[in-house]
Image (cartoon, rainbow over all chains, first blue to last red):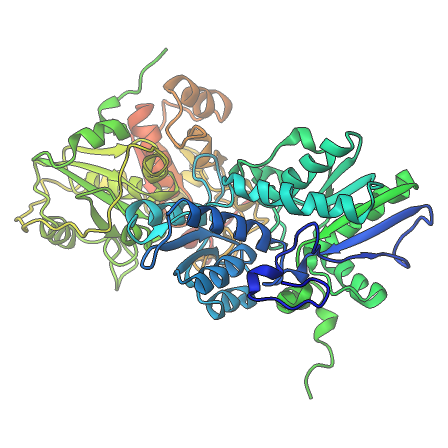
Amino acid sequence: MNHATRVYDNVFEMMPTEQNPTPMVRIHRLNPSPDFALYAKLEWFNPMGSVKDRAAWAMLSDLEQRGELRPGRGIVEPTSGNTGISLAAMARVRGYQMRAVVPNKIPLEKKILLKIAGADLDVVNDELCPSPGMGDGSINLAKTHAKASRDKYVLPNQYENEQNVLAHLRTTGPEIWRQTEGTITHLFVSLGTCGTVTGTGKFLRSKKPNVKVIAVQPTEGHDVPGLRNVRQLEVSKLFDASLIDEILEIDYELAYSRALDLFQTEGLRAGPSSGLIYEGARRIIERDRKGVGVMIFPDDVFKYTANMVKHIPSLAAGTTV
Amino acid sequence: MAAYTQPEVLVDTDWVKQSLGKPGIKIVEIDVDTKAYDAGHIKGAIGFNWQTQLQDQVNRDIISKEAFEKLVGGAGIAAQDTVILYGDNNNWFAAYGFWLFKIYGHKDVRLMNGGRVKWLNESDKELTTEKSSYPPVTYKAAEVHNELRALVPEVSQISKSRSANLVDVRSPDEFTGKVIAPPGMSETAQRGGHIPGAKSVPWSTAVNPDGTFKSADDLKKIYLEQARVDPNKGTIAYCRIGERSSHTWFVLAYLLGLKNVKNYDGSWTEYGNLIGFPIEK
C-alpha cells in the first residue's frame, strides 16, 4: 500500500484512515458568511461509494476475528441500501454470502446495486401503519433470518453494533481533526443509525469539548433514503443525545433542491442527504457567522436520479425526443 | 386494578414456550408479511396465508364454513384443540384469524400477547425454518356466529341512526381523509374519510411499547372515557380491510367485555368505494 502513489494491493487498503482520509472540499459560493470556513467531507470516495463502508468494514472484520463467518455462513442485514452495498461487496470479496432486507420505498437503483454487488434481496413494506411495539419490518425480518437460520447467517445489525460507532471513533473523527488542524468548531451530520454522529462526535468532543455537533433530520413522512426522523430513531441503540447540541428539522424537499445546488454551484455531486445537511449548515452559519464547519456528505447523487426526478420534476423535461 | 373480562384468551410468550409440543395445543402464525413465516417461525407452528387461505378467492368474502373446515382440519387442528394464534404487526392478522375461528365456533382460541415481535426479541425464544405438518383430521365447525360480523346494510343503518358505536381504528390521516390508505398499500378506495358518526381510536392506542395489550384500566380509559364508546350499545369496529379492526374487536369484546361487538371486515375498501353512501372527512 502506498498512499502517495495510490497503489493498493486490494480494495480494503483503500479504506480511509487518518493517513488516508476521504477528501474535504471547501464550500465557496454557497457559503453565506466569509468568516465561516465550511467544508464538505466527501464520503463517496470510500471504495464502495458511501460513508457506510466504514461501519461495514468494522463490523465485518470484527465478525471475522470472532470466528462468526465462514464459507456457508454469511450475513443478513436490514439496510436502506448503502450499508448493504458495502457489506455485500465486502462480504463477497471475503467469500461470504450476504442477504439484504430492504424497505420497499428505497430507490430501485439501490435495490439493483445490491444485487449487482452480490446480495440476495428481501423487500418488505415498512410503513403500513407505524406504531409502538411493531418495530421496523426490515429489522424484524433480518432478525428472524438470523435466529431461524443460525447456520447460514449472522446479523451484524448496524443499529446496535458498537463497531458502527468505533469505526468513526477510529477513523472519521481523527481524520477531521487532522484535516482541520484542530480548528473545527461545528460538525454537521445527518441521523440514520447514528454511528457517524456518535463516533465522530465522541472523538471530536474528546479533543475539543466545545465543538458544536449539529444534526439535521428531514421532516416527518420524508422521502430521504437512509435518514431517520427523530421519531423514527428509537430503532437505533447508537443514538446518544448527550453528544448532539442541536437537531434541526428541515423540510425534506430541500434535500433534493440543495443537492442540485451543490452539484451546479460547487461541483459536488452530493446526494439528497448531503443536500439536507448543507441546508442545516447554511442556517447555522447565517446565525453563528464565524467558525470552521465540516459537513459529512454520506454519498453522491448517482443512486438517486429517480428520486431527484420525483422531487424536481423539471429534471425530466427535455429528456425524450 | 381491574382484570380483563376474559383473560384466558391471552397467553404470554413464556407460556407458549413451555407448551411447545404438548398434545391438544396447536400454534398458528398469520402475518401481514406472508414471507415472515417462511423466514422463521415458532417450532411446530402452522402458517396460514391471509391472502390465499383465509379469503375466498372468487367472492370478496371470508372463506366459507366448508373451506374453513377443510383448511383447519387439513392442518391437523381438531375442534377440541387449543389454538394459539400469533403474527407480525402486533397480531393484526392473528386477531383476524381469532375472529374467523370464533365465527366458525372454535371453542378454545387464544392470542399470544405481543405477537411475533415479542417472541423474536426475547433471547430465550427460538425460531425455525422447519415446516410443520400434522396428520389431517376431520374438522366440523360447531356453529356459525355471523353475529360477529357487520355488513354494509347494518353499518349504513347505524351510521344514520347512531344506534351503536362505530369505531374507526385506522391512523388519524386515514380517518380525516388526508390519505386513502397507508403508503404502499395496493388495496385502496375512491374516497378518503370515514363513515359518518365514527369515532377515531387508532388500533395502536391499545398496545404497550412492547406490543402487548394495555391493562384493562388503561383500555377502559381510552375507549370508554376518552373516546366515549357507549358500553350500553353495540359496537362495530372497522379499518381498511378488516385486520386492524379485528385487533380492536378483540380488545372490546374479550378484554373489555363489551356486548354485541362486531368487526366490519369490508371496512374502508368497501365503504369508501360505495356509490350513494355519504362519508365524513
